[in-house]
Every structure is written in structure tokens, then in C-alpha cells.
Image 1 (cartoon, rainbow, N blue to C red):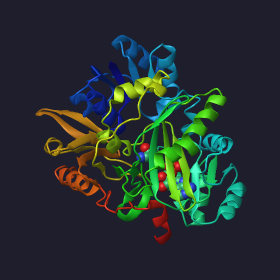
Image 2: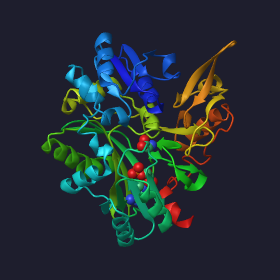
Image 3: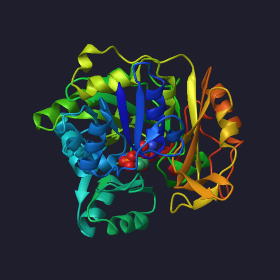
Length: 427
Ligand code: AMP
Ligand code: GLY
């Protein structure tokens, strides 16, 4: 099977790597990819937002499967363009990607499908925002309705900060605060059937102990030894299947990864958010442990044949990913800082260094790897258990450096994970 992965980040690197390790996959291509993917796959300089160009590339390669990684091209309809060209694509249509593209739409679908989630109000005026903040009380949760790369959400005890965030957005969703550990569940979907992957946990805030602003994710691990064993099945029954049925009823069947961000509250799992793609870095440890082939799973989803496919299998043990971010992240990012030690870190047993925001700078003495984004690298390790994987990931991460590098020291340190949202109450 020839595969083409669309995107540039750590998620796409981890997906391409897992495809390259699938014996059923003969070729891995990426557009535009990144220097880490370029080590084992063929890169193509095609704009991931340009559906016509992506479909043309897929056709010229004779690709059997296109995997569209990030939300922006999905929301822009890139998967539709590939599907219209008659090529199997893993990733939702523009219409189905609205589950992530609009928080208000996803809330409406959840309500119609009876999915347990936080109470919410969609607001367009300061008066509506103020009323909703008072209705739900502190901590306040204010979400930009539009796509904001994981940075559109403010969770705060400070009413003025909540109001100020809302004032900067056209339309916001104000929500009830959900208290409990956060879990990411990735459900591979074919429009009517789903196969969930093993749950993971993502550390969203920039600083240790769950302090500082939200980021796209500073580290992750899987499995979650503390989570109920039937969690995935329960979430399929109460969240994923009702959502798939509701989307199909609306004529927008969801084909791709439905990323369910959950809070495990005292009252049971509640949806924090839906995304229309795999989470990054949360999916990285999950893919490291996936034993059954990724290519045939995603192809079956793209072709509406998931019911014929066995549940994905995961190896024993655990995996931990530690993100190395550039100076200024998440408010800004620093580009062009020279990175050293990636080769040595990659050489550590059971470690993969995943590229998220890197570039090659051409110099007189050859190419050097430099930073090119907020999250630069993710050091992922597999071990016997979470503690072992964590020790390996940090040992390898210690070998990498660049000016202004930021990383958390507490990824996967607590058995329960840091309850990031709840920890806000003490800060
Ligand atoms: P989102 O972009 O919706 O994932 O929100 C980003 C982060 O904000 C989530 O991962 C949570 O940590 C936090 N968050 C979002 N909604 C809520 C909520 N209703 N209650 C508590 N924390 C939340
Ligand atoms: N790690 C969170 C996300 O991918 O949205």
C-alpha cells in the first residue's frame, strides 16, 4: 500500500513512522512533512491547505491512502478534494470537521446526540458573556468559537480575565467547569462504525504542576494504569457511537479520527471537546504501542469497512512523550535556534525523536537542524511501565539542547497524572 501523509508536525511524523513500520505499507510519502519524516519517507513540497494540489499529488503517486493530519486542511475541505478524486482518504469532510471547527456546532451535536458534556452558553455580546459567567460561576471557562490551535480556551478564576478573553473573540462558548483528570480517546471512525485506540493523557499547560497558560500539549503517556478498564468501551457507547449516528443523520458522516477530550468527573466521563483528528502529542505514545498494522486500519476506515477489522491491538508496557518547546512558547516561538543531540537521543534504545517544528538551515559546513515552531521536538520512549518509559524519555531528552529550550519535568510523574484543570483551583 502506498500512503501519503499531509501535514508538518509531530502527529504527522508519528503517523508516518507507524505506517513505515507496517509491513503492508510499501511507500510512505509526506507533504510537506518535516526533516524528521524526510529521514525515512519521501517529502513533497505541496501546500497542505490546497486540496486540488494534494489530490493531484496523490494521483501522481498512485497513493492508495491519504491521511490528512491537522485540523486546518480538514476544516478547509482538503479531504473532500481527495475523496472526489476517487482516492481513499482518512480524514473527515469539511462538513464533518465542523465538530472541531466550531465549538458551538459540536455542542449542538452533543446535545442532539445526548452526549454527556459541560453545560454551556454560546455568546456574542458582553452582556451574554457576563450572564453566562455568573450562571456557571468560577472557575470560568471561555472558549473562542473558532479554530485557535489549542490556545482559544481560557480557564481562570479571574472574572475580568474571562471577560477580556471573550471581548477579543467574535463568538464564544462559556462553559461549566469540569473537575477531574483529563483523558484523550482517539476513535477511528468510518462514518458508522468505530474502533477506539488505547486512552492517553496529555499535559496541556506550559509549566510543571499544571501551571501557566494552555499549550498544544507538553507531553503525554499511555496507557493510563489508573483509568477504569472499560473506559474506551464506555466512551464509545455514550459518546462516539451516538455522535457518529447523529452526524450520519445530518448527512455529514464522520470518517477519520474523532478525538474525544474527556474529563473523568465524579459523575462519570464528560466531553470537554471534540477534535476531528489525532491529538498531538497525545497520540504519539499510543502509536508507539500499536501492535496491529496502522495502514490497514486507516484504509478500512477510509473505505467504510471498519466492521470487518479486528479491534486494534497494543503491546504490553507503556510509552511516554516529552515535548521540547522553543523560547517564548506558547505566546510566541523562536525560529532558527540550532538544535544539537537529536542523533544521540534517537540512538537510545526504545526512543524515537519526533519532529514537530524543525527545519534544515543550509550553511557552508552543511545542513544544521534548527527550531521552526513552538513545539520543536517530542522525545518518545517505550518501556516496561510508565515509570520505565518516563525514565528513558527523560534520559534521551537530556541529550538534546537548543537555546531557550523549555520542557516540563513532570510528564507522567504522578500515577494519576496532573489534574491540570483542577489544579487551577489551588493556583
Ligand atoms: P479545549 O481547546 O476545548 O480542549 O480546551 C483546552 C483545555 O482547557 C482543555 O484541555 C482543558 O484542560 C481545559 N478545559 C476546557 N474546557 C474545560 C471545562 N469545561 N472544564 C475544565 N477545563 C476545561
Ligand atoms: N494535544 C491536544 C491536541 O492535539 O489538541
